[in-house]
Length: 455
Image (tube, rainbow, N blue to C red; front, side, top):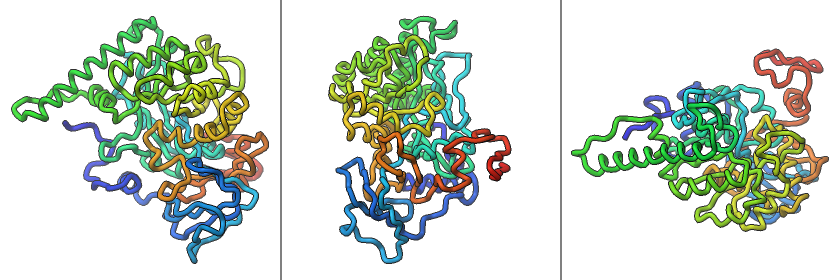
């Protein structure tokens, strides 16, 4: 059955995710603003944290044409003769950070006409020139899962973005499955947020019942499509965009990112996932430390993306939120634990402190650094491209002034696909890291310390 396409008509098929993104950008915006990295670059002398392996005290990272070519101890890595060599002595290099739940880009989701909006796509509302994207890069964030809001049981399809320099969403879009055009997950929520007047559920029990009813409909639609595909004499069902999106969820091609806080709400999510067989990432999961064993014991791998709130306040259902959730999940045997900002709840510029605070309260250092990078990539089916410094993966990395868990450390540079997108010393970039008059006002003229940007 035909499905809604995000690709422009007539776009030739691409064999790799990188090729598909390049085709999308060229077709939609003309020549892409991202230039190929023609000259190899070798960063020497840094302390390298590959995430997928042990730390390298004195390491070398070689990148070329947007891809990591080599990583290892200095002296053991072959550097191309035409490479530009950068002395990174005293610095720390690690993969770009993966934020599994963000709201940068100024997008929105479903409206008040219904509690469930599976056909809504956040990519149709993302402003690729939003200054929140530039701000996030100053915190070392290179890949994000941009969500619709959480005021609905199902507020729509998320979008996975690479925070490249770009003019349109097609310059940023990152697909976990190019052939199927799966470039995001499905946002769902339970608990307090969707408990509103009709057509919203009003109660927790009614919320779960409405979700179950929708998935039963989707199963019936899925079966009708399968029957029609197997038997040409059977007419397929009328096209239904909502059902098409939910079939992608049922097939496991689109991951559900489920906003949930209270321990009983978390268990409701696990029941729904078990009943309908969908893949799920628990988002926020404030009470994770109370039900860590139950999460870890789920028959299918369940991701847990937690938020570290370092200021008081919030809603009553999150009253039990604890820095100790990450450590509790690790000790329970939960394999996939990540962090997120929910930006603007937590500022993307301070994302690294999430790992530091989790380690302070019981999470191991290696597990916390993995949670900032590779685990987040796994939650979006993007770990084949991002999340660790391995040859063949995208050259997404950050250069730090010191240890990533130190309060004194600054992100000095952010690189995406071998191109520098943030440098703290650059007067055009620095204001997004430190603030200043007019910063983060995308439609305004930015003026500070003699720097002007009329956009």
